[in-house]
Length: 172
Image (cartoon, rainbow, N blue to C red; front, side, top):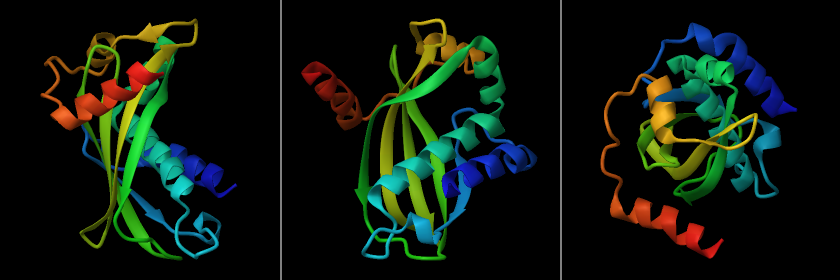
C-alpha cells in the first residue's frame, strides 16, 4: 500500500517540483518506512527496484514526457535490470534517487539510478527499458527521442553496458 501512496504523492505533487531534462538528471527524494524493510531491518532488495520505478515516473513526469507518451498510446517496460548494493538503508532514513539516461540503441534506453544519502552512494542500478504501443508492437528509440525533443544521437554506451544488454538477449 505504501508504494501506491508514494505514487499518488508523485502524481499530485511531482508536477509542482522543478522541471528536469528528458535525459535527466532527476533527483527523487524518499524516506525508508517500516514496510520497506526485510527481516534484517534494512531495505528489502526487491523494494529498491520498486522505488526505482517511481523515480522513472518522476523523471518522465517532470520532463513532460509522461503526457506525450500517454497521448501517443505508448507505455514503458523494463527489459533488464541490475544493481550493486553498497550500504544498507535503515528505518526512517532519507535518501534520493538520481536518475539519468546513459544512452540508447535502436530498441532500448539505458538508465542509471544512483541511490544517495548525505552525498554517499548507497547503491547503483542500471536499467534497460523499452516502450511499447498499446495497440501492439515496439516503439523505436528514434521515435521516442523525437517525441522527447532529443535531436542528437545517443552518447556512446560504455562497452560493459552494451555487452550486458546484448549478452542476456542472446540467451533468451
